[in-house]
Image (cartoon, rainbow, N blue to C red; front, side, top):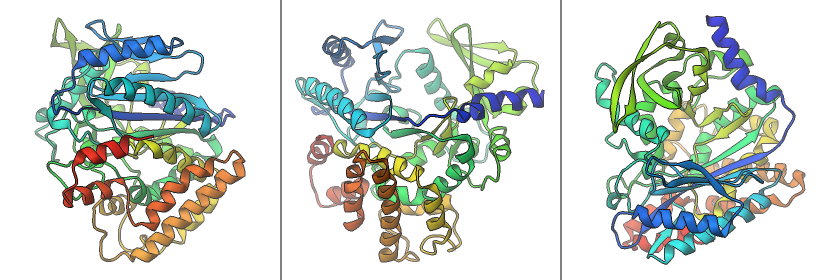
Length: 460
């Protein structure tokens, strides 16, 4: 059985990386804000979804909720998807894969501008913030669909894990008010190990550049609270399912070994999700039967299932760097950015991916943040604070970050598409010793109305 599982893991996650391709995929989640400081009216959301489909008639529904409302539209010609993530409080633009960033950006701005204009007719707006600044006014109601009902049920189940020595936060609905900017890049099999290892080591630098998730009404000193929302939820019961890799992989076999340490918490049977206690995937297959819960007749009922090898299809981690069944690496540690800076996330990763050896040399020789007694994970936790730790020299840190950006710029220049222009905002952040999260905190401390920030971060 162990060999069967390992072979299946290899086929699902490793084998696809042997394909020769070089595309970019981008997902941008954006909070919906009712400027009247009232809950988002889902009827308005549904009306705008219908208007979008009429305006962009290549799109057709590919997700209908239990109430008959469309929560996902897809364009089969370019694979663009406009949908709602977790709830109708959060809209997502999942852009179909392309060879260059300008093509993606043009389509994203077209969709975003239309949707924003439609919402503004109702005194609503969209903005580029990693945590919805009006979250306390909204209803935390999941989209009534198989996946999102199961996911919320799983996140709410933290009280069942009394024997686990970890602290759970009280935000099981965090998926309904937190937003990310994710990038998927094709990374070839031969480059997997060094790409994962090297990008893991620059997560602290990414925290400096991209943090934009301030839990304003409860925590005004952490610039990327999204990290904690994932870590201290039921997704974090097994720390290998979230966050960073705290190991250096030496081979693809090491990556496979890591996949075997992940937890699984759901599968599907006959089109219905079944949620069960989070457990190691190898232990899962040692059971003759698993007792889980299935949503039926508006409530959850117990059900017994027999593990099947294809259940590995539902093994999903939420790492900062995820290996996907598409043969891509998904970079998912970055918050949604101010809208005009959206492409900076993909530009940064794309430029560095093509210069991984130079990046590895820079980080391997670093003495600014590394070799100070801290792991990469610990450094990221320190660098998402509004104030830098005293052991780090700010001038040297700026130099290290600038050098990282220089490598990314060189990688983009060599592509010859002019995409390096999207890095300009990141160089400015280093120059000004700031990031979007720090700017939010500064604005709040100076008494600036949050509505001004919402408007600024939502502009194109």
